[in-house]
Length: 298
Image (cartoon, rainbow, N blue to C red; front, top):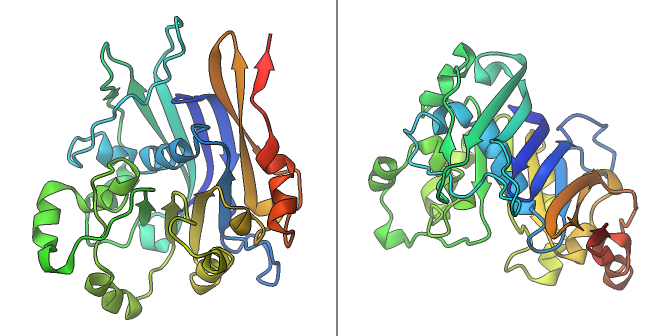
């Protein structure tokens, strides 16, 4: 499974936005723009994490809305001052493969209703028959994993796969770190040997703040290394690091900009219109990617 495009409406800081992600195999392998990478760049609070969450909620919506995953949507519907917005809607155009049991292109949408408090509610919708594999935890179908910015590894001594499986459905557990700060990651020693012996197939990897805790030299290597080592996986990443941005072509970068109108903020999302590949950190920091002000609209 790959996500071709994502539409967001009335979700967190987004009034309306759409993004077409890069896909593995989209361009020749010799193209230095890394065809399987999309990087989101923007100020704190602009909504980079919200884009990752919206992708999960749309693509895994059938299992999340069933209530079986253990996820409660907290304050996701846009609350714009005195205005009374409608429900939030997130939808994806998916490219499915043989491993998903239903090759071809399909669309999924998740609707989230605002309640009087801050805990929003999913609106039940018809679940397409072709999503049945979502409930098969050992199936390679609909592979999606996500890593939030609060990344802590579960101590090996206290790790228990059995206990984890009882608290969260596996497909939600793979992305729970994007929604819950207290979620810990499975120790490398518990899954890497099995992963090395298997073909991960096709799927989506979402990483918030990919440069987190990395030495500057590693920041300059992390995305190209991941993208080339796992060419069949689609990577959607966020970062604030000019060192990370400098390793990518303009086609890989998407910029989030905030505008202010009548005291209400909203975020705009657009492809990069600048080429910063190979530039120094100083040059990148003074580019439009890092010095765009909040737009004041009257």
